[in-house]
Image (cartoon, rainbow over all chains, first blue to last red; front, side, top):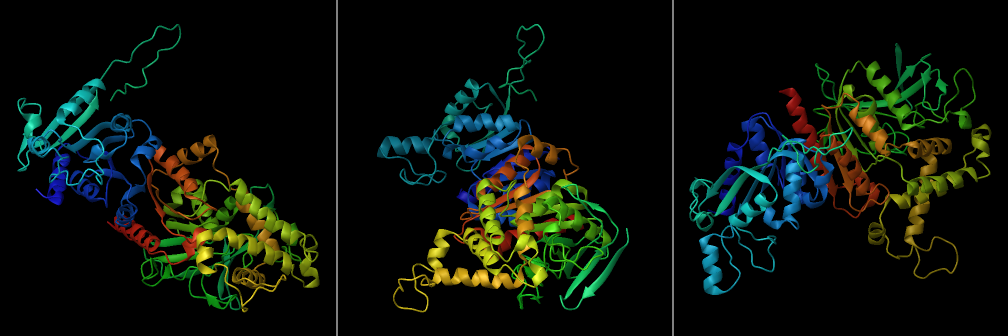
Length: 227
Length: 382
C-alpha cells in the first residue's frame, strides 16, 4: 500500500469506530480530510489541530474549525471530557512524550482513537536482523537521521503501556501489509509479527470514585475520569 | 427609535442621526444625540443574511473600499473588500462605519456639541470600545438588519469584533479577529502615552481648544504618528525597506536633516497624517484602546461563557512578526474559547511585515478570510 491509500484505509477504519452525531477532535488534522469524511458520513461536529501552517490554512479556508498549533503544547487548553472522541492518526510515534499525549487524549475525550505503524512487523525485524541497519519500509519510509518518527514501538509495547495506564482497549483492528483486516484481540498468536498497522479505540476503566475517609467531603481521584 | 439618514456629498458618505437617544456610555456620561458616518458596498439580499460589518483600526475610517475623498486615495482595505475580492461585495453587503469619537463624519471631538456652535474638543466624554460597538449596533438596527453574518476587524477593529461577540452574540454569526488581543498591553499603553504626550505638549494643542484659532497641533500629532508607525512595522521589514540608505544625498550631513531614508519616510508619514486626522480624536481613540481589557480570568470566563454565544464561529489570525499584538495574545483568546469548547479557528501567518500585515499583501490572509466566509455562508444557506 502506498502512503495515501494507507491513510485512506486508516480513515475508513476510524470511521467505523465512531457513532453518529458526536463531537470529535482530530489531532494532526492536515487539511481536514478526515474531518470532512466524518462530517459527511457521521454527522460529526469536528475540531482539529494542525502543526503545519499551510495545511492548517487550507483546512480553515475549507471551512473547518482548525487551530494552527502544536498538540504537545496546546492540548492543555481543552477542558476535561469536552469531546466524545479524540483521534490521533499515525502520529503517536512522532510525539516527544507519547505517554503524556495518551493521557491527555483520554482527559479531553471520552474515548480516544489511536493508529500507528507496528515496529514489530516481520519485515522490519528481518531488515534489522539481516542488514543490521535501521529499517526503512513503506509505512516507515524515512532514514534514521531525518525521520519525524522518534519513538518506535510495537503492538506489544503499546498493549503494555495501556495496561500500565489502566486504559481499556475497547476495539483493536490490525492491518497486514496487503491491507487485510483482522481483530487484534481475537488473533493472539503472531499478531505482533504480522500487523503492519494498528488502530485502537481506547477509554479509561470505569472505576467507582475512590472514597477517602473524611468527615465532610467525598474526594474523587483526579486521574480517573468516569464516562 | 427613529433614525434620520442623509448623504454628505462632500464626505461622499451616508450619515445616520440618532437624536435625543441619550446614549449612556461606559464612563457614566450621556451623549444625548450623535451621528455615525458610514459606507455600504454590495447589496443586502432579500433574507438579509449577507451583511458584514467591517470595523476599522485606530486611524481608519468608513472608506474601506473605493475612493476616500479625505485622502484622495483608495479605501484602506480596498485590496480585501470589493467585487471578487476576499470579502466579495458581489456576494456580501458590507457596512463600514466611522467609530464614535472618530473624525471622518461621526460624532467625535471635532464635531459641534449638540445645540451649540462650538466643537467638543477636550469636552468630549471618554469613550471605550464597548461604546463604539454600542453605537454600531444602533446603526445596524436602524438599517433593519437583525443579524450580521460576520464582524471583521484588525487591531482596534479586532477589539470591536471581540466586543460584538461579548455584547451582542445573538446579533452575529461569526467574527474574524485579526492582529488583536484580549487586552491592550502595558507596552502598548506606553507607546500610546508617548504619542499623547507629544500632542499635549505641543503649545498649539491648548487643552484641546486649538480649533478656536483654526490651528492644528501639527508637530505633536505628527510625532505621535511617527512613533506609532514604528510599532506597526518590524525590524526586518524596516531593514528590508530602508536599510541605512541615505535620502537624496551621497554622504551624511553631520547635521539633523533627514539624512536617512527611514527618517524621511517617517517625517512624510507624520506630515500626511496631520492633513487627515484630528489630534483630539487621536487622544480619545488611543485611550479607548488602552481601556480594553478582558484578560482577567474571572472576567473573560464570565463574558464568554455566560452569553448566548454557543453558535458563534471565531477566526483568529495573528502575524509572526507583529510585536504590538503578538501571537501569544491571540493564542490567549483561542485558549479561552477552546476551554469553553467554542468553534474557533486560529492561524499565525508567517511574515516579516509586522502589525501592519493585515493591511498588506498576504495571500494566506486572503485565502483564509475568503474560505472562512464562503464556506460558513454556504452552511447557513443550506
